[in-house]
View (cartoon, one colour):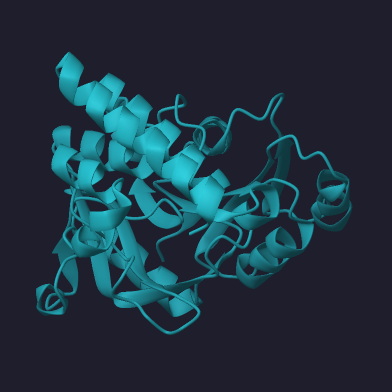
Length: 288
């Protein structure tokens, strides 16, 4: 049977993280769990350590500093690779996600069957039952990010990056980007220097890791017959209150993305960044 190791990142969210780990710890497909506390400011690390310290599958870790989602996950990935070098597949899972064991086993079987797949994600089911909106998307372009930052036209372009339902006809479908909330990746891609870019504190990290995975010759895919639940923003919402705060963080990450991974002229960059800042200002003043 194919097995995997999980990396689960906690920050000030004991209840959600505990529920997530309890849901997967007895799965036969799960060999190890790296529970990484990203320097929580409450007592969640101590409570998690008290509950799970005797579990043989679970390693409870704490970062020395909260440098964000990317850094925290890399911390867990490095631990898995160094301590369990036989782990061929690593799962990145937000604590506010849930997957059933048959779906996980199928994901691993699909990865095993096609060595060209570097990253594989199941379909994301939102609390309202929708599994088409956020399971994957096309790589955002300059024009899309520019227009989506202008409130008067943002709604008209919001579906531009979505794949159509009729695209999801095969069990494994190549895509540009999958969410960072839950995916399986092949440890081999680490040998090609593919990791989360730690300059991104939160948001946009999946753009980069999927893009880099494809540049190294691996496929990024969605498994259309597998599903996971994502209680979106359940963890993030406890730290960042209100849409404007999340939008500010998102747009900060977009600025980093364009500075590092896209070559823009002075005028185009200034225009894009102005729209980012202006959209945050509008939402701060008038709400979403």
